Image (cartoon, one colour):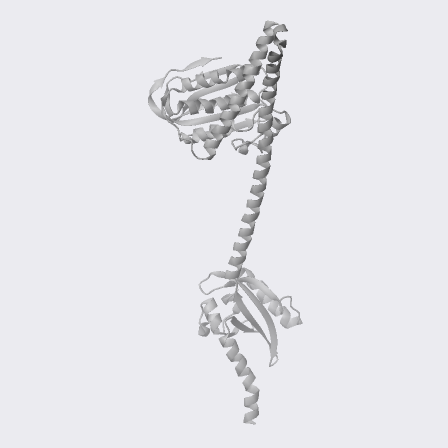
Length: 394
């Protein structure tokens, strides 16, 4: 009799030993939801000694508050109907430690009927490390996809750039070569003096266009290589504006634009590389001339902005649509309007202007209303006295 009882008890004792030595947390509760089994792994996982866990409501011990009603309702439904949506399934949910912190857990719950009552048992596994690894893998994959997308974008940009530069080189060269061939054939002598003069002017204009393209390409290479090194000195803002207006006069005259200059009186000088800053303001003027209807004015204003000095170029052109405005200073950025209307340029002028402004400790900004025009502003730190007198022209 005693031997038989020992034989029957042996498997149960072995099971108890297996559960107690398991590396996975084991928790069992009765029909009332109170904890009746709590192994050593559960102690470590939840930070709660066995003697404190036994007899406590499980939902208040390891179940986050937001899930407690569902936990209690599901157990009561099974006891009443024998039906459950979670028993025997692998589940992932948040679990609660004794210190109030939560962690992701994976568990399987099964029910056993003993002595006319149900016992609910679960092995619980902390999947924090696994989820962290999965998240890292997912983020790595997303970064890889972003890199591939960026490489594809750069490849498209390279193709677009080659096409744009080819066009910008070929067009003026074709004009120059055509006129030079006429000179070489002697046909030019039969033309009126006025027409010959216009032909020479056209060749000069196209040669300057080629020079500007080459200068922009060299400048943007310096900018992207991080080699832009200004040689600053105190300089009057009015002088910068006047020189930029003179250097872009051919472009503004071509579009019959009246350039209106407004320089406030009493402006402090700026500490800047004269050539670089003239080029940056010139880029804004060139941009305004390209995108403004013939005969519309372009305004250049220089004024104080707190302790800084701002140079603003205002046009009454086609404007920039909102979704293109954030990219306007990016390399090779070309608005759809520019592409559709085949407007000259490869999208480098504004990039260079931004680099120059930032190299001087300043900023550049753009605002625009489609159909009404755009406003570009370079803001630079003032270098203090001497102050300059104002002026207007145009």
